[in-house]
Image (cartoon, rainbow, N blue to C red; front, side, top):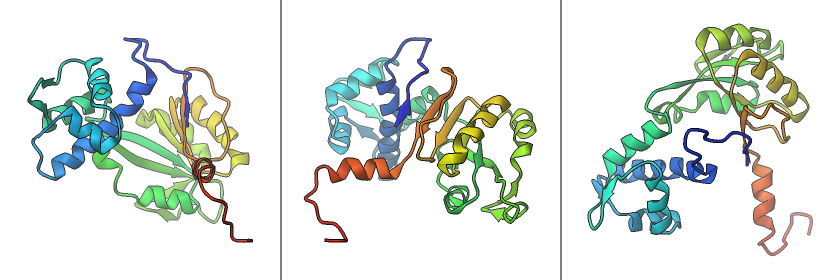
Length: 219
Protein backbone atom coordinates (compact mmCIF):
# COMPACT_ATOMS: atom_id res chain seq x y z
CA UNK A 1 0.00 0.00 0.00
CA UNK A 2 1.30 3.43 -0.85
CA UNK A 3 0.69 7.02 0.11
CA UNK A 4 0.81 8.64 -3.31
CA UNK A 5 1.03 12.25 -2.21
CA UNK A 6 4.41 12.85 -3.85
CA UNK A 7 4.90 12.96 -7.61
CA UNK A 8 7.86 12.99 -9.90
CA UNK A 9 7.85 16.71 -10.70
CA UNK A 10 10.87 16.37 -13.00
CA UNK A 11 9.06 14.46 -15.72
CA UNK A 12 5.64 13.45 -14.40
CA UNK A 13 6.25 9.75 -14.90
CA UNK A 14 3.24 7.87 -13.44
CA UNK A 15 3.95 6.56 -9.95
CA UNK A 16 2.64 3.13 -10.96
CA UNK A 17 5.50 2.95 -13.47
CA UNK A 18 8.07 3.86 -10.81
CA UNK A 19 6.53 1.16 -8.62
CA UNK A 20 7.22 -1.50 -11.26
CA UNK A 21 10.88 -0.59 -11.75
CA UNK A 22 12.10 -2.34 -8.55
CA UNK A 23 10.26 -5.48 -9.69
CA UNK A 24 12.03 -5.33 -13.04
CA UNK A 25 15.35 -4.79 -11.28
CA UNK A 26 14.78 -7.75 -8.95
CA UNK A 27 13.98 -10.02 -11.89
CA UNK A 28 16.99 -8.83 -13.86
CA UNK A 29 19.23 -9.50 -10.85
CA UNK A 30 17.83 -13.03 -10.72
CA UNK A 31 18.51 -13.51 -14.43
CA UNK A 32 22.02 -12.19 -13.86
CA UNK A 33 22.57 -14.73 -11.08
CA UNK A 34 21.46 -17.44 -13.51
CA UNK A 35 24.15 -16.36 -15.95
CA UNK A 36 21.81 -14.71 -18.46
CA UNK A 37 23.48 -11.95 -20.47
CA UNK A 38 20.53 -10.94 -22.65
CA UNK A 39 16.79 -10.97 -21.96
CA UNK A 40 13.83 -9.93 -24.08
CA UNK A 41 10.82 -7.99 -22.85
CA UNK A 42 8.79 -11.11 -23.59
CA UNK A 43 10.96 -13.20 -21.26
CA UNK A 44 10.69 -10.59 -18.53
CA UNK A 45 6.95 -10.41 -19.06
CA UNK A 46 6.52 -14.17 -18.78
CA UNK A 47 8.39 -14.19 -15.48
CA UNK A 48 6.41 -11.29 -14.07
CA UNK A 49 2.95 -11.80 -15.56
CA UNK A 50 3.20 -8.40 -17.25
CA UNK A 51 2.82 -7.84 -20.97
CA UNK A 52 6.01 -7.27 -22.94
CA UNK A 53 4.42 -4.13 -24.40
CA UNK A 54 3.90 -2.73 -20.89
CA UNK A 55 7.52 -3.41 -19.96
CA UNK A 56 8.78 -1.68 -23.12
CA UNK A 57 6.45 1.26 -22.50
CA UNK A 58 7.59 1.60 -18.87
CA UNK A 59 11.27 1.55 -19.79
CA UNK A 60 10.77 3.98 -22.68
CA UNK A 61 10.06 6.73 -20.14
CA UNK A 62 13.76 6.65 -19.27
CA UNK A 63 15.43 6.07 -22.65
CA UNK A 64 16.23 3.28 -25.06
CA UNK A 65 17.85 0.29 -23.37
CA UNK A 66 17.49 -2.51 -25.92
CA UNK A 67 17.41 -3.22 -29.63
CA UNK A 68 14.45 -4.71 -31.46
CA UNK A 69 15.06 -8.39 -32.07
CA UNK A 70 18.05 -8.43 -29.73
CA UNK A 71 16.64 -7.77 -26.27
CA UNK A 72 18.20 -6.11 -23.27
CA UNK A 73 21.73 -6.51 -21.99
CA UNK A 74 20.92 -7.70 -18.46
CA UNK A 75 23.94 -6.19 -16.68
CA UNK A 76 23.55 -2.84 -18.45
CA UNK A 77 19.81 -2.60 -17.76
CA UNK A 78 20.44 -3.51 -14.11
CA UNK A 79 22.96 -0.70 -13.76
CA UNK A 80 20.65 1.79 -15.48
CA UNK A 81 17.68 0.90 -13.28
CA UNK A 82 19.87 1.21 -10.20
CA UNK A 83 20.81 4.73 -11.30
CA UNK A 84 17.21 5.66 -12.06
CA UNK A 85 16.06 4.38 -8.66
CA UNK A 86 19.14 5.94 -7.01
CA UNK A 87 20.17 2.62 -5.46
CA UNK A 88 23.61 2.61 -7.03
CA UNK A 89 24.76 3.68 -3.55
CA UNK A 90 23.91 2.72 0.04
CA UNK A 91 21.10 4.66 1.73
CA UNK A 92 21.25 4.97 5.54
CA UNK A 93 17.98 3.92 7.21
CA UNK A 94 16.87 4.38 10.82
CA UNK A 95 14.57 1.85 12.47
CA UNK A 96 12.15 2.66 15.29
CA UNK A 97 10.96 -0.40 17.18
CA UNK A 98 13.17 -3.12 18.64
CA UNK A 99 10.55 -5.84 19.12
CA UNK A 100 10.43 -9.14 17.26
CA UNK A 101 9.88 -7.43 13.92
CA UNK A 102 12.59 -4.86 14.58
CA UNK A 103 15.02 -7.64 15.49
CA UNK A 104 14.25 -9.44 12.25
CA UNK A 105 14.65 -6.31 10.13
CA UNK A 106 17.89 -5.23 11.79
CA UNK A 107 19.34 -8.72 11.43
CA UNK A 108 18.28 -9.18 7.80
CA UNK A 109 21.32 -9.21 5.53
CA UNK A 110 19.42 -8.72 2.27
CA UNK A 111 19.08 -4.94 2.37
CA UNK A 112 22.61 -3.78 1.69
CA UNK A 113 23.17 -5.44 -1.68
CA UNK A 114 19.97 -3.73 -2.83
CA UNK A 115 20.95 -0.24 -1.70
CA UNK A 116 19.99 0.13 1.97
CA UNK A 117 21.61 -0.22 5.39
CA UNK A 118 19.88 0.07 8.76
CA UNK A 119 22.28 2.27 10.71
CA UNK A 120 20.43 2.85 13.98
CA UNK A 121 17.65 1.29 16.06
CA UNK A 122 15.49 3.18 18.56
CA UNK A 123 13.01 2.06 21.22
CA UNK A 124 11.49 3.49 24.41
CA UNK A 125 11.48 0.18 26.34
CA UNK A 126 14.04 0.50 29.18
CA UNK A 127 14.71 -3.22 29.01
CA UNK A 128 15.78 -2.95 25.38
CA UNK A 129 17.96 0.15 25.64
CA UNK A 130 21.64 -0.59 25.17
CA UNK A 131 21.01 -4.16 24.03
CA UNK A 132 22.06 -5.43 20.63
CA UNK A 133 19.59 -5.82 17.80
CA UNK A 134 21.49 -7.39 14.94
CA UNK A 135 24.80 -5.49 14.79
CA UNK A 136 23.36 -2.35 16.44
CA UNK A 137 22.69 -1.16 19.97
CA UNK A 138 19.22 0.14 20.81
CA UNK A 139 19.07 3.85 21.55
CA UNK A 140 16.31 6.03 23.01
CA UNK A 141 14.16 7.93 20.47
CA UNK A 142 15.27 11.20 22.00
CA UNK A 143 18.49 10.66 20.04
CA UNK A 144 16.62 10.52 16.70
CA UNK A 145 16.84 14.23 15.74
CA UNK A 146 20.60 14.50 16.27
CA UNK A 147 21.26 11.16 14.61
CA UNK A 148 19.12 11.86 11.54
CA UNK A 149 20.68 15.27 11.01
CA UNK A 150 24.28 14.25 11.61
CA UNK A 151 24.03 11.19 9.35
CA UNK A 152 21.80 12.89 6.74
CA UNK A 153 19.24 10.09 6.92
CA UNK A 154 16.14 10.48 4.75
CA UNK A 155 14.51 7.06 5.19
CA UNK A 156 13.01 5.46 8.30
CA UNK A 157 11.22 2.25 9.19
CA UNK A 158 8.43 2.28 11.78
CA UNK A 159 7.97 -1.08 13.49
CA UNK A 160 6.00 -0.08 16.59
CA UNK A 161 2.41 -0.76 17.73
CA UNK A 162 -0.30 1.21 15.92
CA UNK A 163 -1.01 3.44 18.92
CA UNK A 164 2.58 4.72 18.95
CA UNK A 165 3.13 5.01 15.19
CA UNK A 166 1.80 8.53 14.60
CA UNK A 167 3.90 10.06 17.38
CA UNK A 168 6.97 8.25 16.04
CA UNK A 169 6.22 9.50 12.53
CA UNK A 170 5.91 13.07 13.80
CA UNK A 171 9.29 12.81 15.53
CA UNK A 172 10.94 11.38 12.43
CA UNK A 173 9.48 14.01 10.11
CA UNK A 174 10.49 16.85 12.44
CA UNK A 175 14.01 15.40 12.44
CA UNK A 176 14.17 15.56 8.65
CA UNK A 177 13.03 12.13 7.46
CA UNK A 178 11.46 12.30 3.98
CA UNK A 179 10.30 8.70 3.42
CA UNK A 180 8.80 6.17 5.84
CA UNK A 181 8.26 2.43 5.53
CA UNK A 182 5.47 1.71 8.02
CA UNK A 183 4.76 -1.76 9.38
CA UNK A 184 2.20 -0.49 11.90
CA UNK A 185 -1.43 -1.30 10.97
CA UNK A 186 -2.46 2.32 10.70
CA UNK A 187 -2.67 5.06 8.08
CA UNK A 188 -0.37 7.90 9.11
CA UNK A 189 -1.22 11.58 8.80
CA UNK A 190 1.79 13.24 7.19
CA UNK A 191 2.59 16.38 5.16
CA UNK A 192 2.04 15.96 1.43
CA UNK A 193 5.78 16.01 0.65
CA UNK A 194 6.44 12.97 2.87
CA UNK A 195 6.22 9.59 1.15
CA UNK A 196 4.88 6.63 3.13
CA UNK A 197 4.87 2.99 2.06
CA UNK A 198 2.79 0.54 4.11
CA UNK A 199 3.42 -3.13 4.79
CA UNK A 200 0.52 -4.80 6.59
CA UNK A 201 0.39 -8.59 6.04
CA UNK A 202 -3.18 -8.75 7.35
CA UNK A 203 -4.38 -6.52 4.51
CA UNK A 204 -2.85 -8.97 2.02
CA UNK A 205 -4.31 -11.97 3.87
CA UNK A 206 -7.76 -10.38 3.77
CA UNK A 207 -7.37 -9.67 0.07
CA UNK A 208 -6.54 -13.33 -0.57
CA UNK A 209 -9.30 -14.82 1.57
CA UNK A 210 -11.96 -13.15 -0.57
CA UNK A 211 -11.04 -15.64 -3.32
CA UNK A 212 -10.90 -18.75 -1.08
CA UNK A 213 -13.52 -21.22 0.01
CA UNK A 214 -14.19 -20.54 3.67
CA UNK A 215 -12.56 -23.07 5.98
CA UNK A 216 -11.55 -21.66 9.36
CA UNK A 217 -9.99 -23.12 12.48
CA UNK A 218 -13.21 -22.90 14.48
CA UNK A 219 -15.28 -24.84 11.94
